Length: 55
Image 1 (cartoon, rainbow, N blue to C red):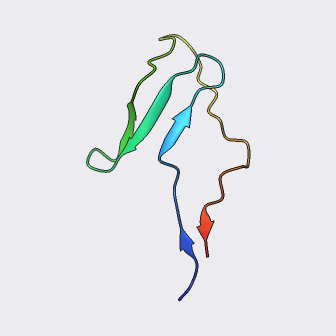
Image 2: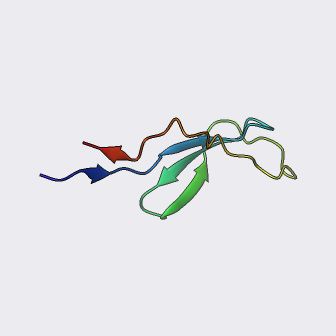
């Protein structure tokens, strides 16, 4: 069995706190709990801690 590639399912904006979850049916990100600021240029929490390869 080879390694499995995972994708993130939740992301949070570091500027305004907007939280989004991946929706498999819509194949896009959807706002979950915190809507954040409507005019924020969202800076998602992509900092290298998420590891996409699951061995």
